[in-house]
Length: 262
Image 1 (cartoon, rainbow, N blue to C red):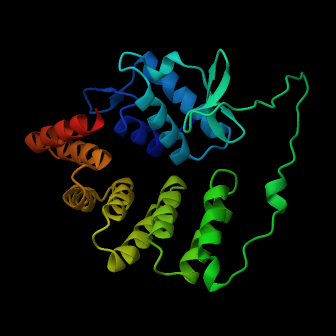
Image 2 (image 1 turned 30 degrees about the horizontal axis):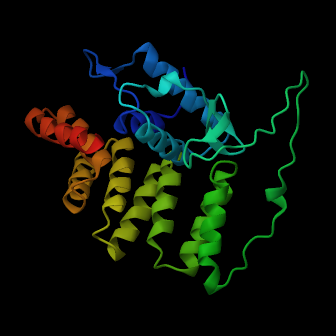
């Protein structure tokens, strides 16, 4: 109904932006306030802001607010690829806090904007340019995910020892619902870096979407072993423990998540 992917909703729940109750079939039950925030996230996605940037910006914004003030009390919008909060003195970036210049012009007619970034030269395919391909991929995620995927793969080809490229590629594949491929990327990366908690987490996300819950459970467990302060991993692990009927373990990890999210 909202046009938001299940993955984004799960991350918003995990990050504590929305706190739905559980229904009789263990389904999420959202309040009106939850739906308002989900609609805000949908609007930011429609403005071609990458889901991870949305979450990062909302997390930064939430951290600066008094505990009694909800995000739904703010006017959150997209300006020039940034998540912005509209205030009396003008819009400011939710991520950096800097004030922004809003070039949007009200018009009764549709306005077309030329994107000069599409005409930029691609990085040269040399062994020194892996970081360039990575940076280009990160900039393309929102507007051209297929090109971003190709750029991440190019970065990995030029520099196989590049864990961030593997992480971002796996996350992008999950967002595009390429779960099998995302799991494969994580498996390959874990052979090199078996102690990177985020890789275990990303692989577990893919396994969960593929309904391979036992493997997902193991991935989340390994993630919290390696990074005990990984709040999102505690939350996802608690959900799967609850799903499997291990309520004592679920409660332990829910409590860990709440403690880490304060």
